[in-house]
Length: 209
Image (cartoon, rainbow, N blue to C red):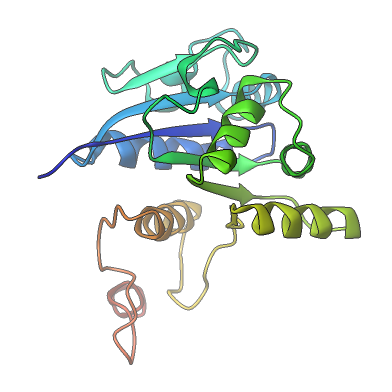
């Protein structure tokens, strides 16, 4: 199977934290992933409490997965002694989902006042993968310039935009498809159910019956 991947999943205070649940669930199921460091910003904890119920102080792993998991370690958003603040910490990189555009702006400007921002900064300086799944819309000129700047620095802006040609019937269909596409993008492909064959996808064929 080869060496298992260690990576960071971050959640910010943009709406759509349910997507983080799908992505984290996919990561813990994947045998190619050995460990996930979960970073949830203070605003992210507020949004998780709002979208899932419960309190902001609840364990974010339990809120997202329904239980703790041996693969996942969660860190305080203000803990600047956590291992991912150092470039010597071995990790593949970092995925931020959902990613607020304010966070993109602080990353673009090199601010590292929180653990999440510092972890992103380390990914850029170490030339590791940094995938920012932005959710807000519409974009203003500041947003666009910040996204251009982080792209020039080596990050990938990967908006939380669903596809429509697979004829999704439910919100869950959209979550599952975005997760599958994201996992494939970071080299952890899960399924070819949504892959274009030249005429259609299996998802479209099944849903169009």
